[in-house]
Image (tube, rainbow, N blue to C red; front, side):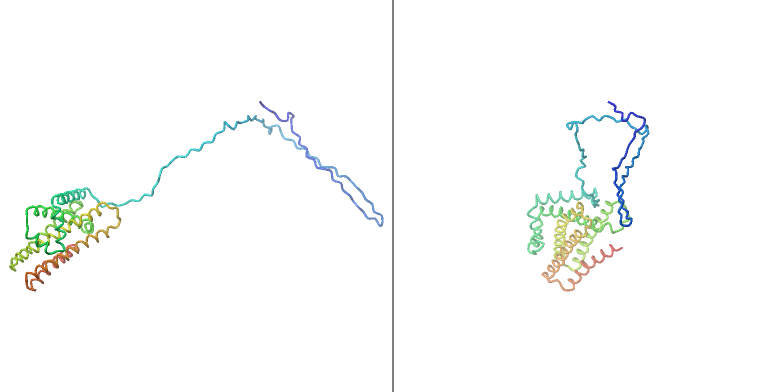
Length: 298
């Protein structure tokens, strides 16, 4: 259906305004004359050209049932903030920790009673003396496994805490650990050798062997105590591990102080002269610490 508006050639639009009555009053002396005039309304005509006319398109009614509104929302899921964290774990670290945990599991399973006596002897000199006199085969197996745990964990702790700050002239982290491991083994064997030589020179072999036994005893306790520390340093997401490193150093310091006092107690009970006590402290305990400190600085 097409509707054509205004079939004529042009469209005439007429605008009109209502008539306005105007009253005029003039005063001529005493005579008042009033005139009234009507103003005709203004009329204008506007013509629109035919080209401006448009055909009107019919509009069909729209049923409200046919109209449907739909909103589509794309689910983006839960978005959490991201933060890149650095890890200090390497492949070989996991292997060393598995070996340590396996050795500890065997000791805990087959030598559980010895572990209780080991920790009790750290603060009780009588228990330590009894363990020194027994020397059974089962205790020897347990002691060897605990010695291996100590060397592995102590070397790993030194590497995790101070390995990045020391120039080893090698790029492989595993080679760096092997160098720390070798240095730890050499230090322990060298210290025991010096103890043995001094014991023979002073004719105090029994006291020297007892001191060495207590030194190994505290080393085994320290090795067990450093297991959780190395695990935290290896698998934690702590940006600044200095607190954990300080905890490990605190364990080392406590065991070292207990060992020094235990050695002094053994020498005093055996009526060792004061000269040998001073020689024991300076040569075998204090001097190696200065050597290690100088080596680290170099």
